[in-house]
Structures are given as structure tokens and as C-alpha cells.
Image 1 (cartoon, rainbow, N blue to C red):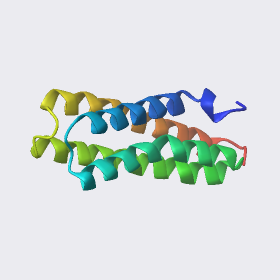
Image 2 (image 1 turned 45 degrees about the vertical axis):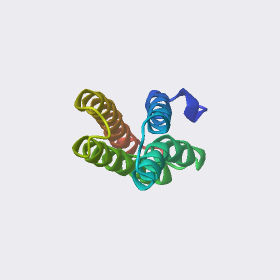
Image 3 (image 1 turned 90 degrees about the vertical axis):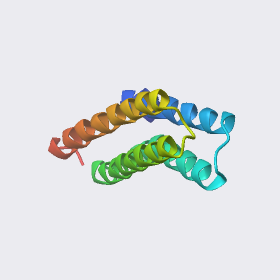
Image 4 (image 1 turned 180 degrees about the vertical axis):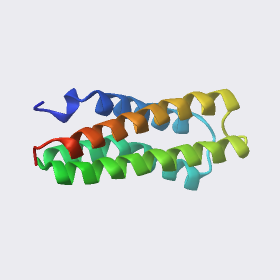
Length: 119
């Protein structure tokens, strides 16, 4: 694989971050929550890209863990948005399923890289 753009997990994370960004610009969000969820969602694909470009599996894994952490942050923020009635339950459910899928893909990718002989 020569480009991070070819990674399926990157494509999903990229599309998810765009969805979050558009959604938070359409709804009336508290600025603090809006900024935090946008930053966390954008962090997922950006860290995949940054880690890939370092061309070291050890460094890549480190950045994939950061992406995974950001996916947890997004899930938490989505639940807060649901409790504050900023987002509807169905919307939150769909988005959480999406980001959980990304997180699972990141875990599989991390395990693959950690078990490979390539550094």
C-alpha cells in the first residue's frame, strides 16, 4: 500500500469526520461541544494519515491508537449530545455504530501491524 488514502479505515474515518462536521454546522450546538466533537472526529483520519506518512510501523501504531482514542471521545460526546437533546436518539445510535466500526477496524489494523515483521 503506497497511500493512506487507499486504506479502507481511512476512507471510513474521513467520511465520518465530514458527516460530523456537516451535522454540527447544521444544528444549534453549544460552541464548546461543537468545537470538541469536530476536533475529535477530524483527529481520527488525520492521525491515520500522519502515522502512515512516518513510514515506521511502530510510529504508525502509535498514531492509530490516538485515532482509536479520538473515536472514544466522539462516542462520549455523541452521548452527551443525546442527553442534552442536541441530537436525536436515532442519529446518535447511527453515528455511534459508525464510529464503533471504525474503532474495531483500527484495532484489527493495530494487531496486524504489531504482529507483522515489518518495522
